[in-house]
Length: 262
Image 1 (cartoon, rainbow, N blue to C red):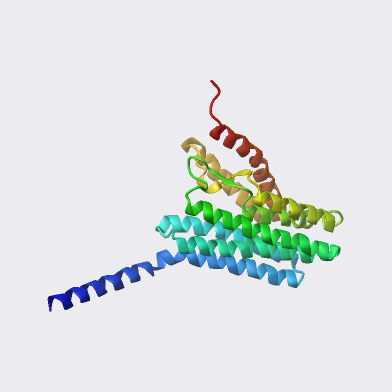
Image 2: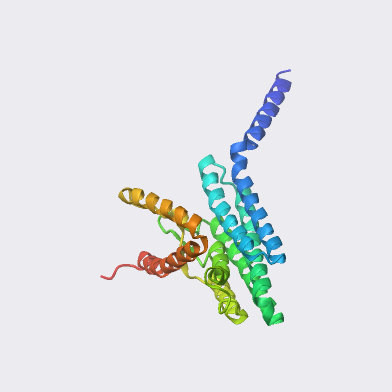
């Protein structure tokens, strides 16, 4: 009798633990991740219809969900291995396959098979970049608070780089930037940066001093207002600022790892 009661108690405890694992709060990060996947897939659908602005907007929306799911995971204590693997699979679609297909249909197809080869290189390098990120995370070798740098260009930033000519065309016209040769150069450059060993800043682990936070919030508010009124110009300026931070981050990371001179 006592043994049966212990079995029932143990079974009830397992049920309670499973219900806790299925709590809505812990599902929020995965829901946000899957919404990012939906945005990436929808971007491909828009591209197949030659709706370029909505295709790029869907990729940008996927980037927003990619930022939100990580924050939600840390907020709700739902940072799990399953979530990390799901996030990488979604990133491959949203920031690897989707941007490559969009740029191919928009410009690279003017080069025929060579343009498709450039897109394939981008797909492959995105997969390599994400696989390396997963391995580094499993070994605790990725970005940390003490060393807030990724190895290589993150896939969302690479996706932004390959669609940058499209943003420029929305703002200034197609005359120059829709050239397939230019697009292929940018795609190959983004691919090489993803698989490089170059340190790039991790926004996730960057922390501003307290006395700068009010200024940062004001700047973010101004960015949102500009984004609503002048979306393409604001996105171009935001990416150029991020690109300018990469050399600065590279120098900081070198100083962080090099021993001081005696």
